[in-house]
Image 1 (spheres, rainbow, N blue to C red):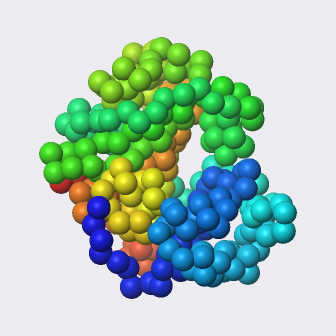
Image 2: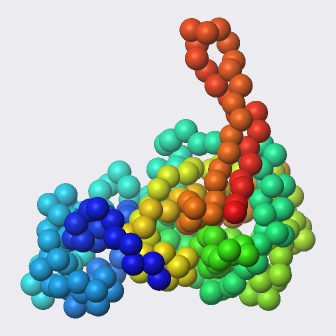
Length: 267
């Protein structure tokens, strides 16, 4: 794994990684203990404690003797990441679905895990299903000839995903599998941001813990406007780029740009 370090202090890198995981609802049952965090990040206890103090100072966690460290979720984010997506402007993808299938066919994939789980509040909100309903959670790493490209987690309602499993996911792009399951894929909404690699993702993408990654959230709808897949993707920025061609609409004073074509390219 690359050993290059970031200019940020180590405790601040740990704080940023943990904050992102908290925002994703990763620690519903409590954060790992100090010893576990020391082992995960290969740092001293004082470094872990400084990171936790920053999180506590922001009101993101509570630390009580005998009860461990637990997340404190603001009411505004109780619905999880899907609620945030609904509040922000998102790219309306037109013509990109074919490009995504093409990318899937031109890269190799390793299936890390496939399981049927109960939908969390965030997953349920995104897929518009009741909390606790069964969904298929699949985790995969996609690679090019140069090495790992992306770490992808997808959630699909169990009623749809019963048509495919680990073997099929290792052989075909999931959009193709959805179509073969009778889904008529219509459109997608996508957000692109940034995230720091945690220990697990860093190992699979062959980068240092705390490295910057492109974070993609993509919600796929069928032609009846029913959500059929929610995707969380983490991409190495040195091997993946997202390109948009824009055209100006209206007068020069309006300064409004709309997307004419979108494409995802990888190296």
